[in-house]
Image (tube, rainbow, N blue to C red; front, side, top):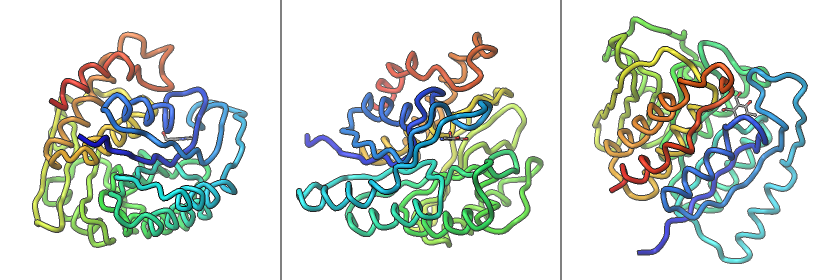
Length: 278
Ligand code: PXL
C-alpha cells in the first residue's frame, strides 16, 4: 500500500517534548512519511521556562512551499500546531491553497485554562478562527474554542448540550469536523468529543480523568489524531487512538512527574500506539 505523507508545520522547541519533537516521532511510528516544516527554533518551549532563545524561520516558509511545488511533490495531509504570529497563519493559509487535495488538521494552540499563552492576543485568536475555517479537522481545547467564538470560557459544570452546541458553532467556522479536547462531564472521566458537520454526527471517547497537567499533551493528542485521520481511520477510531495514547503517556509519566513536569514520556508508549492501529 502507498505510504501516506504528512506535512507538520510548527515550532521546533529543542528541549521540552512538544510541537515537532513529539509530532514527528509519533507520526513516523504510525507509519506515515513525515515532512516537518519548522516555523521557529526555540531552546525550550515557553511554558515554565525563562529566557528561552527564539529564531523565527517564517521567511523560509514561502520558499519551501514554492520549491515543493516546483518539484511536483504531493501530500496526503497537513497538520499544524503552535505558529506564533499572524504572519505565520497567513503563510500556512497559503500552503493550504497550494495543496488543495490534502486533508488539513489544525490545532489552534494559543491558549489553555481560560488564558491566552504569553505571545498571543485577541487578534491572533480571530486569525486562527479563519485558518480553522479552511481546515478539514480542528482540535481546539475549550479555552481556544471560546476565544475563537468570542464566548465566555466555561471551565466546568457544563453538560452535553453545551459541548454539542459549541461544536456546532465551531463547525460553522467552515471546517468539516470539530473536535474539543479536555471535556469532563463526570469528574471521574475526561475525553474528547467530535462533530462531523457533513453527516451531522457526534462522536466521543473518554478515559479516567487524571487530575495532573503536563505540558505538550495537546500536541501529543493532535499528532496521534492527525496520523489516524490521514491513515484513513474513522473519526470514532481516531478519537479512541488519540485519547488512549495521550492518557497512556500521562500514566507513564506519573511516577516521575516532579522532574518531568515539562512534558510526557511519550516514547515508551509508542508500541501501544502502533498496536492500537491494528
Ligand atoms: O505545546 C504547545 C507549545 C508549542 N510550542 C511552544 C510553546 C507551546 C506552549 O506554550 O510555548 C514554543
